[in-house]
Amino acid sequence: MATPDREKRARITRRATVFGLTASSILPSIMVPSRAEGEWSALVAAAKKEGRVVLYSAFVGLAAHKELKKEFESAYGITVDILEARASEVRERIRIEQAAGRNAADVSENGRTTTTLQIKEERVFEPHGPLPSLGRLKADFPSDGMRLPVFAIVYGILANTTLVKPADEPKSWLDLTDPRWKGKILSDDLRTLGGGGVLFSVLQDLYGRAFHEKLAQQDLKFSREIPANERRVARGELPLYIPDSLTSLLELKGLPVKFIAPKEGLPYVGYDLALLKNAPHPNAARLLMEYYLGKTMQQNLARLGLLPTTADALTGVDPAVAQIETTKLLGTTDPERMNEMLSLAQQIYR
Image 1: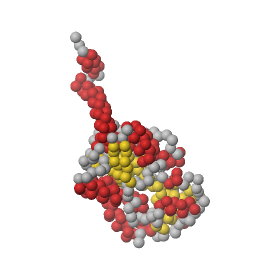
Image 2: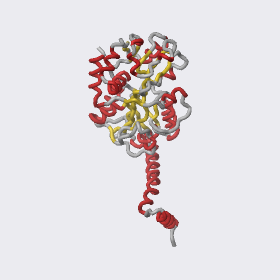
Image 3: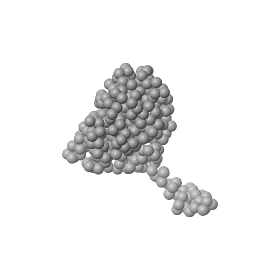
Image 4: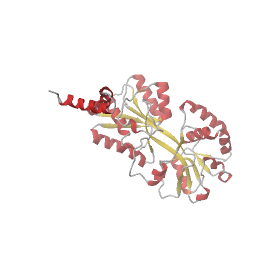
């Protein structure tokens, strides 16, 4: 007498024959998802037993971290501890802990440039393995198995709407060299790491040194006090600020400012999660990484003006922010050429 399992296999085999397939070619495709689901369920159970996960983040003051702690702990009963510090401090802490064999952190959250250097020079990460949501990543943000892209900061131009009429708004990054803006552009320092360095690198690749030499003649007002810079433009001290993060749009809501996305697109900085070697809570770490790609976390990030890395349709995002988040991306920094670019910027912008 045939067992139910054998009858099911026979039905599959007969149907496969109709389509010119064999049982050996179709059965694995049906069984693999089930096996993967079982393995992931086992990982979730193991993560719950670990009961804790530690994240070292180079994004200080990220509001989504509060929601992450509350929602992840509510969903899985796993405590999330988050240490926030500057990128250099996070990197050094990880390096020291790994060298001493006293690993406290499970997951690193850092800009792609820093993460890439840690992979290449310090080798403190290991592959994150299969995650159910990897297939939902946008084409611009693929995972290489080590770095998991979870969000990006995009940069445009902040303009005071009282001082800059719609007809005069810069429509292109090239418009910043228009004589009308000489002495009227406030800028993050293009010679250092950060948004300014990203803008320099991306526009250097796009337009070359001649563009920067022309922009240098515009008498840019460099300042690294980013929130203060945005407020200065809002108060009308200067008409333009470059490069400005989309996250400011919500913070400056109601003030006479506008975020402008030039026609070429927006420079960006991607942020990655990476699994640390010898993580004390490896299963909870992978579960946290998967959670970052879920709709809840991606939506929380988008609401802050950060660019999600998954292709899911999100709701509850400010319409002005949502529109800009669909703008073409222009490019980002190349970690391998970072020092070269900073040196060039220092030569041009004396």
